[in-house]
Image 1: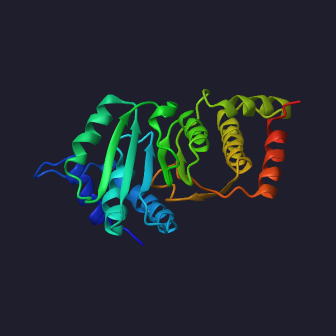
Image 2 (image 1 turned 90 degrees about the vertical axis):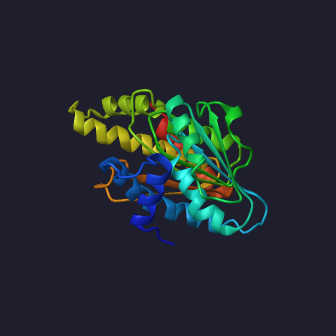
Image 3 (image 1 turned 45 degrees about the vertical axis):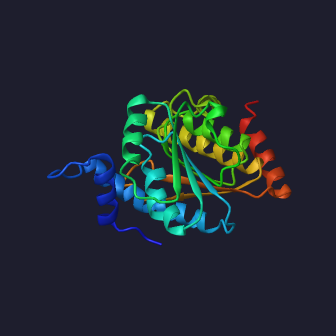
Length: 255
């Protein structure tokens, strides 16, 4: 399945601008490019869900819920089966924009609910969602989403982390390792090393918990420099879990 840029532009304009004689800004057009790549991943994940019972998608650290709303209209509604989207966003202005957009959504049969909460809040999450998506979850939000996805026993995760700050737990580990290895303190050298450790820790944490995980480029880096997507599915394979747990322990061992 592919999604045409013109179609995505039209929906974004209708949902979030809704004014005649206006056009999308450059940042909105870049969002269309991101959606074109990410919605293919969402469609593939949804297609793997064969049961006719209600499909539950959670859009975490959602911003204006571009992913959840476009998925509702373009992927979930055309299935003709019950579906529900839970949007989790903490910033009041974005929550309001999302609620306004829902009124212009064309997704019959899909219930969309918005929860104003931090992703760390366990009460904000649905139980056993079929799919969790998180586009550009900044800093420690990506780690909080991983923790909650494991806790609520989601089936699949599509995670696109954003910037890595000092508040990310694995970043402190990476800084310690950089000193142990004698890496130079040049910012660009350290940044790449730290990001690699953070990415590795997140991948191994998912795999040690029983999630088959693949890391891919979902769009070109010219669209966004934060273009890595963690595609994870809960399978619970004991051998892979044990190997990942051992690697995770070695990664975390700063001795």
